[in-house]
Image 1 (cartoon, rainbow, N blue to C red):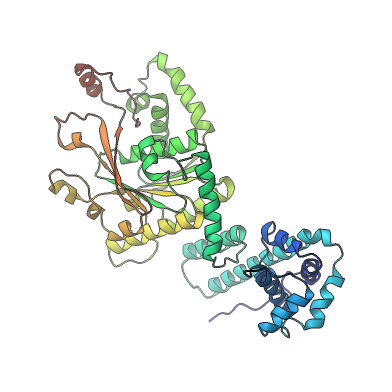
Image 2: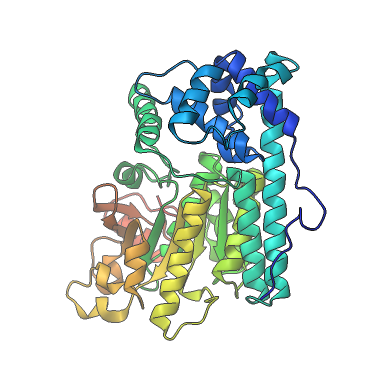
Length: 464
């Protein structure tokens, strides 16, 4: 088995600055207010220190501040805390702790010293990661795509979390959340996540929440892809949330036509066949200009796996700060690993999408097919058990929404162009139903509306 050579045994020393580490600790011993600055403004952690004795001293300082009745942080109290934990000798002795304030060049520059310590820790993290990747490559441990994805995930983690993620106490989590909730209550804001652009859906969900996997499922021809693309438009255009759309079924050309038709309120069929009337072209051009400014990113790869999707999303997020990812649709994604059955493969895919949502802390909407079992019931209203090929999809999803159109099964239905959006699962909120109206692309719909004395629906392909 190949083992990475440690840098010190190879004659090279990992990036670190012992003087900066000692200066941070010495400055805190001179003025304990410096501790708040390095913790809150720089995000310094004990593991950022290269020397183990400096890690022990910094942990002792934090312990003193976190007591029910915080104690002063100075050389005397720090030594006493280290002694009580049996760590004084490992920390360099009492004499060493008392010597730290004497090496500080300037107390006022403590944040600069702390940033040096943190940045060196990031460099060591990169070094360790690349060495580990090198060892895996040399040992042929995994296929190339898997190794690339793991490498990107590790480096992304270092860049966004300092590579030193720690478990958080419930106290820290509660303090952070109560501040958010208080601000929301004060401002009277009902949306805490990415808006869908549909008032009733947002009222039910509070917006699509960061880290959530949302499954939007239906039988074919129900309009689930139309609804998903509308959500992308609404989030990106109306709410300026960058959105990524992975379309495994439709090409980027088809998507462009659909977006333009939706924004211009014209028929995509007429647009595609060049039958748009001259007086409507200004609306089409305005729609194109609006879409061109929107932070929408499209990938129409027809053969893509979750690992590649996660890598692409990670790069986009690092550059643009994504607010939403939509995948159309789940069953077309290529499984990356071996699976003994289609059920297991779909389960791996849904789990991968949930991991993506959690990793980037943004909502991921996965469009999904429903099994034919739904059509054996009367009325054929979807249920969670209808999710096609895997119960794991239901388990991984935080929200499951079905699209159901009565007119699809009953041609005499009075609900032309209407769809029920059934929120069948909502891990952190209520379930329920809302109704949406699809803008008709069929002339007969407009004629039937007129026969009933109602205004005809606009002739686009979107959703009202």
